[in-house]
Image 1 (tube, rainbow, N blue to C red):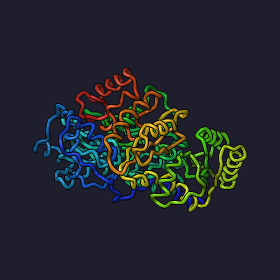
Image 2 (spheres, rainbow, N blue to C red):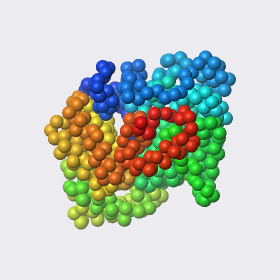
Image 3 (cartoon, rainbow, N blue to C red):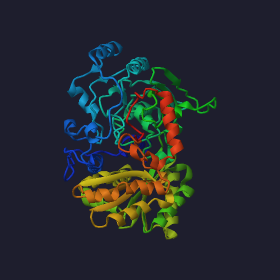
Image 4 (tube, rainbow, N blue to C red):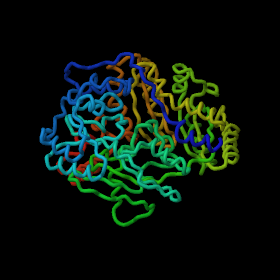
Length: 534
């Protein structure tokens, strides 16, 4: 693939897109009080398929859907508070419902807060002043980036003050030699890549929401993306952060050094903590070079043991140029063919493995990928396979993997689980789920990031079914816990998964988390009601 095309590939072509106006067969709007409202609400969450397309006012308030969740001992915003906010961020205090409503609902369209005030700071100093005041007044706040999360972590639960970082979108510096970028937290990933592209650089994470997600939100949820196998997660690529603590103190850990062993690595506290320990206002990120050549192979296997053999062979034979290993089962391939009329270049197989390479020498990389294909086929590990180097063919192969979620929505109601499990148990969850739900569902599919052992389990039905939901939860999370997996591979815990925190963490670990929260946010004003179960 020529370098000019690689730039488009790396920065645009292989990010998941979202198709609007695909509705669930039955939206299942629960409005009546029940004896088990929380369970009923979770049923609605998991069968939602019209993500981010619902009118905000049609989404029931989270405070109503969580009747057992009580508002904390926080103050309520008064006219005097609004006057103070206006002095702190002049002309950037929004109180009109039409201006705020979209910030009260997260991208999933299932969590809705009742925030009455939206503040839009432009500088770290303004964020500091806001938090200092809110902490003194005991006003709860929720930091918000691009609001592309799926677990309700970036929106209010009750009437928390929303602090939007969207106007903090300045790129501060870029060292072309080291590849270190320093920028404000509100920079959209697309904008960052636009600034990096002329210098032959790109962000280490490539996400489907790149056009709206912000780097601060990515850091706060430790976003992964499609190239995590190659570039790692943000714990390794973020070199420094600037964060404002609950009391307004600014913590400047905005180092641009790759090596700094002077005491505790405090920046790590803010990566993945969902804005509960402080508000990230700036970051320094290590950015890799845009690859000069990209190729993909699609391989068909007839047993999961062969899938693991293929992955092992790819790691051994491709090594430094291996950038992604993605997985689809037959049901995943069938749904994109049936519901989206996409064409698979291979015949029918039980499993499919997509292998991508990214390097600097197209001929060298293609030769290595063809060698891998020859090896796995000659040894009976793979039944069929194809290699693509032309941009259009590369894109068509990636489209099969990236459009599984879109295709599933056409089935109607989708119960979705994104978890990580040990590699040896990767597909067992899908097989066990299929056996558990039997013929009561349309299909059970498994796909995901094989290289990170991240499996996306999806179960579809024409419409919501209490019986199917009860068969799935909490059974799925219990299953994951028994094999020492993680109930949240991406997006964090938010409010939707907080009751399952102990499924992936020991009691002493959660206790230490709570102690850190209490130490850094004694009054609990930062993103309350998230992460921790009551």
